[in-house]
Image 1 (cartoon, rainbow, N blue to C red):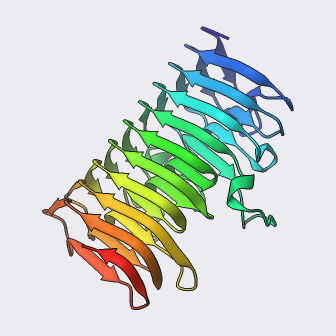
Image 2 (tube, rainbow, N blue to C red; image 1 turned 120 degrees about the horizontal axis):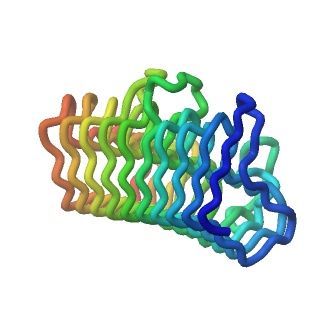
Length: 280
């Protein structure tokens, strides 16, 4: 599908494109989604494989691209070189719950093999104030997800949000700046992570985030495995550069980051528990 314009004017109920179950090998390219659409691109059925969304413009919608609970076996989703502006919800939300929304799955039962690359994303603070949205990119569950080379600017709550046992996440080479505080929950950071194993955050640039450039807010009762935070540049963030909280870590590596001109500590480490292989 190429060069299609989708506009929906009924507030908060429209879906631009909806994938049926077992849809495979689809490509959306050079399309425009605008109006009051709740979800411009919506994947919420089983058996969906090999989807690409490239070179599209999403303007003034609530969610740009949303994958949801019923698409838990989604594989091979590529979101590349799109333009998301005036988004009031999340620009890109991969919602593939593992231990949330009444679901009890293993990590590899969630959506996997997802690439998010080369997009421009903006979710301005003045468009909404709901608690559960306002992220440039949100990941809940899912595995083997690559987030690279994106520009995430002027988002009202967080640049990238990771939660719910998401694993094998690579966040590299992104530019994240001007992250707001609407609402102000002390989590208004460039990257905010609640739980993720096998996580790499490397070679990103952060500037003017409402709280921290990188905030790893891990649970006190779960062990976190294989986290690498290296070679990031973090400046002018209100609360500090990097904040780490949690209790039990295995193979945790923080090195070669440049953190300066922030409002608080360069590295805030609130980890009183067991640290195995924790390297600074």
